[in-house]
Image (cartoon, rainbow, N blue to C red; front, side, top):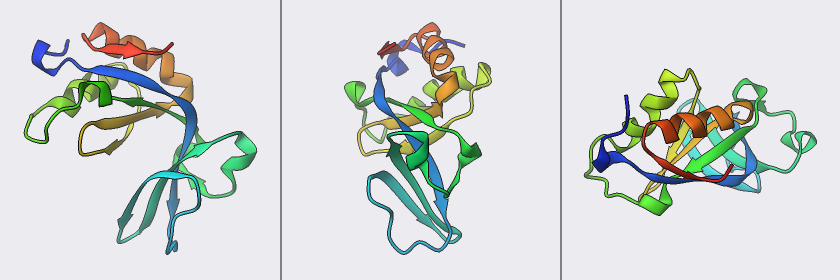
Length: 133
């Protein structure tokens, strides 16, 4: 299914690699975080990882490093339905797992590092523009 013209977005592949971590007893996030969400079961933190050694011993989603796609170039209001679905549908059809963090203006869609090229191809095939490799 391709994205409808009114839901087509301009994304960019964000430089860097990221860890998605669960910190069950954390009071504050570690340094270097770019997103955090507190829930009853603990703190979820997304942070940039310089190398595998800096990933540390924390529980990371599947032990994987992630790449981020950001739609800030096609920022949209919170009242537009289907904008995130337009990104997730082609990724689901390509069997690519995601972790999503939303901002006021757009969404950060994280995909496993080894699936980044397939994710970009799937999004482009669905009618989105993606800057980056």
